[in-house]
Image 1: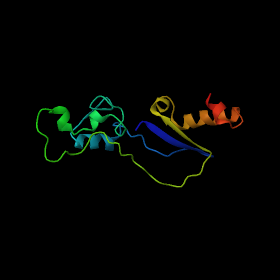
Image 2: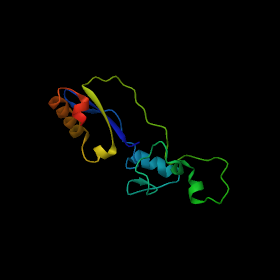
Image 3: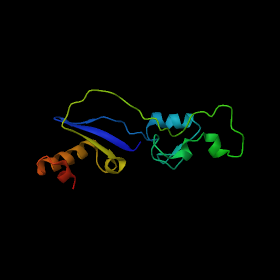
Image 4: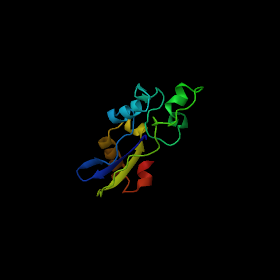
Length: 133
């Protein structure tokens, strides 16, 4: 949910994943279709990702959250938060992959993050452990 993968290429950076957040129009619509809402870019004002492991409370059917004392409908219906990832398969070629959470990408663009890592690798003779220190 809150991780992004980028591939460092000779020409810059290729983003290999899409952020799975309620700020995306398609994810916000899916959440609304499930009976929830998005406010302040968060599911039900709480969770900043729309697909995640854990967060079981927001994976329950909406009727259980808003009407916990009423009987459940025959069909539970769609969920606001899913554990199912969006997956794309494609062949890639590049120098390295960078996988990081939203804490990095809230501060750096994908291109900036790849540039920082590339610079660290150059300054540390290609050693990823020393470059990450």
